[in-house]
Amino acid sequence: MSTAVNSSSSSTTSAASLPLQPSFNKAQFDPASSKEDILQNEQDMKPGSRKFFDKSPEGNQARKTYLTVFFGGTFMVILMIFTVLPIYWGSLWKIPTRNLNGWVVDFDGGFIGQSVSQALGSNQASQSRVTWTVISATNFPGGPQQLSDAVRNEEIWTAVAINPGSTSRLTAALTAPNTSYNGAEVITAFAVEARNENAYRSLIRPSLQGTLDVVSRTMAQQIAQNAANSTALASVMAASPQTIVSPVYYTIQNLIPFDQAVATASTFVGMLYQVIMGFFVVMIAQSAREASGYQKTLSTKSLIILRLSSSSFAYFMISLFYSLMNLAFQLDVTRKFGRGGFMVFWMVNYVGMLAVALALESLITLLTVRGIPFFMLLWIIANLSVSIFPLEVMPSIFRYGYAAPFYNLSRALRTVVFGTKNHVPQSVGILFAWVVISFITLPLIQWFVRRNETRTPVANEEIGERRSRASFETQSTL
Image 1 (cartoon, one colour):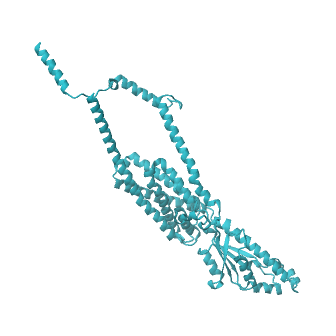
Image 2 (image 1 turned 180 degrees about the horizontal axis):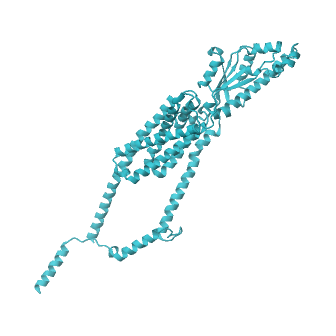
Image 3 (image 1 turned 120 degrees about the vertical axis):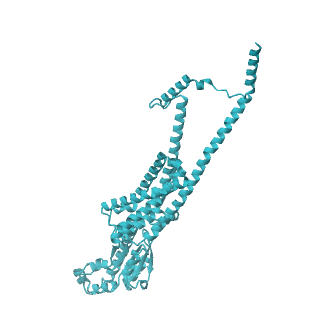
């Protein structure tokens, strides 16, 4: 009996000397309860097991999450309508904000040359989109040909030449009828459509036609009045009536026409497609890294090298097949660089893809998959807005276009496709600058995000340990 009491007392003492263990709900470890919970959860997650207005706690939480994400995203789209899309609309709203510049050169030196120069130099035509400046013929010792070369080399947008000997030819034709007299040989206007087809078709050509039509009618009236008392009037009207009816007219020389309609696909819309294809590569690479586990397991240095090398290789191949596709539709790329034109065309497209798509590759780490589409829309709109009309006629805020990838890519491609002034070195240099920026920002952003990712688990673990310790101490006290 004594032994039993002592044993019981010893057991009680030993139990009392041990610290209290946390108390747990037995139901949590009841096999039957756990099985029921698991079956219930599986039933709740089964496809088609819920309705949208389900009143269960899980249904309420799911509905709240869905509506928050859906309406939040819709609000962001509406916000972009009023913040991003106006960039594009604003670029077209008041075109032209300023006129293009044009030169008038009098190579005649006679009555016709002086009259036409004064008429154009006064810039009296209210509808003209060109501001004319009279330039002395001594600046162009090569004559109208040198003036046309200046327009071709993009020193000026357009130019008007009053051809040499115009007054003397007209005077001779009024004295002695000349059946071959052609008033259109008096004035020659020069412009380059391939430099910017929208500017040529909407601004330059209408301005030339409107202004020179007025000048031609005015000159015809003056010459007809002067010739009214001429004794040779009857014979002139009989043999060459055009000498009286249209003594002064003009010819517009489109020095480099935009004569390949398929080129629109590469010089404008194709640039948008390059961004979209680059976006596909960004998403594919992101999925590949997550599926392989490289997003978490690779070291920061290895991950950066993988991202840059894989993206560069993908754009290299995509730009090749993109360029070959243009050739399949008979795009002529030999006008400027001959047989080497295709290589230049390919490399320009490759650098262009690197410039526009590596920006997306860099920022997806920071903006995540959910945020990168919003930046892509901003990136596209900001670039397209400065690629439609010349920056000279757009509001000053769009001067950023001189450094924009699309603007420089389009200029370089026009050089290859149409043979305009060689902008390839300058434009490719600017595109390379964008590539370098991405090669710098991508590692920095990746390092920043990886550093935060490595710190977050440690912080969460410390918080969890502190909470467990506090809970344990509380229950021990009880």
